[in-house]
Image (cartoon, rainbow, N blue to C red; front, side):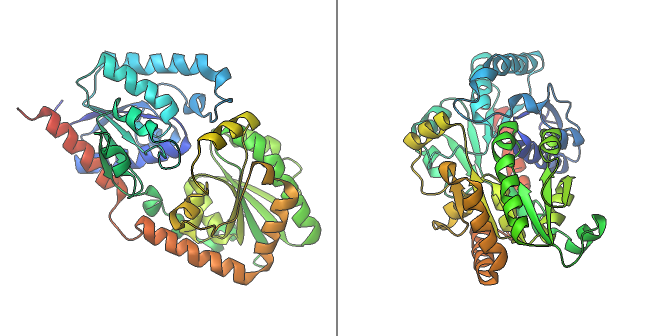
Length: 392
């Protein structure tokens, strides 16, 4: 296929990767005047851009050393389906997106079966948080890496891997464009009511572990304060789970889906209680003060503590190298502790303003106001295809 009509095979394994993939597809289509075509695995956002996914990405939405074990037969079956599709109609380029636990299986299989197809990956594993041997192993499997953070390329380049920092998609995601008044009007929430945004994660295991804790937090806060309304933005992969587990919620509750609803909720909310992850950057982009909480299977926690070499898990705190956003992990992820911290944020305007200032600083470091990350990533991939096809 020609440079002007590239066929790109994409593999995203969870909702955050699906959103990245959708934006990249749109950018690729723009830069090729609509001639790019796609195959692979993605979620609802990538489907909206025209992808016919081989299977639901919910099959791959699992995290943790222990949690993945029961899913291994399904994971290997899905790997084989992806590799078979690649062999049946080889693309101009393979792009795996985040979810390196699964995508390294795809990269390894593609290298063995289709060694001439360029293999690129979007979103670098946090080798600065884990042991750097991961960078060396990744460099052996792929040809190029698109990173989201500017400090990441050197960790991979020293192992011979081409790495390009393209910027973080939160900058172009619209999290700072929410409309508070419209959200309140749509959902019949009064101007004097205080909205608490609750984000228990996008994976089933996260919801199962965190939502009961978050419910208890809101129960404690509601017992001490009047006029609280909870909004839970969710995604397709866990929407039914969230709905079932949020029945009989202790405050008035609104469940919402879709990026526009989520960002409008952020604009309308006073504070947020959220799982650790990409959503922390969206909250920062929206300027919404939050506390971050997370816990995993105890055995996973033991293994992680042996391997991790960072002080924080919240991406905002990592960017700033200070605890600007309170984070409560594992044994600290308890209703009493979280309710105290969130209550303080609700009651203390000075604390909220201090955190907002820190969030602004973090987003400036991440490149707010710079070029579109998706367009930059798309151009790098198109150039890689051109280089492959260029005569020696």
